[in-house]
Length: 192
Image 1 (cartoon, rainbow, N blue to C red):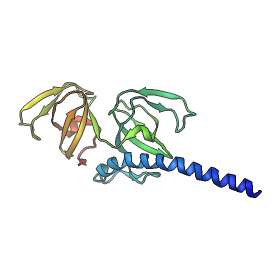
Image 2: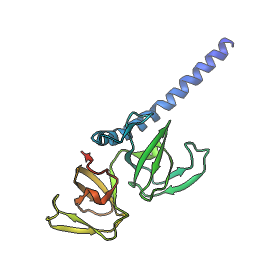
Image 3: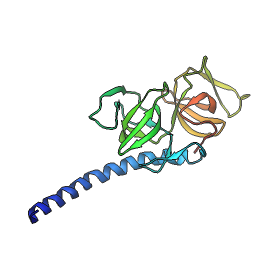
Image 4: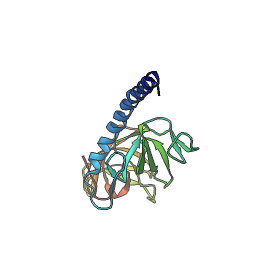
């Protein structure tokens, strides 16, 4: 290889690194919040091979238009397009800049990591036969503020292992929901 060829190769590698590092930093930053919340989980979780964060763990959709693909590349077909920002997804595997995710209905596929956020959200359990109570305090005897239908999207402020302090994504309403009634947080998980 000539000196010119070596120089071109070094320029290409340097340019590629300059373009990839900001992307990697954004991916890393979006997953840090989820990892810190998942740190209190314990047995049954393994370390992700790319990020070192627990797998499985929950994240949420950051983008208004997120494609779930058959495999971890844009070369793979799109199964679904999610247009609901803040929808919780469970990360079940990592491969490069791709995360294999599962939604509340059990559908799984691959999403490009920058489409995901570490911000914790939940939905009222889709398995619930009737509405779930939103209380003004974290106890069953507390006053009921509202009744929430299955699949209503919520932002999680924190969870103590039994109750989650939540707010509705579409209304200015907040309160406490029994953690067992939510999809987007593990049983007994503490979220701060």
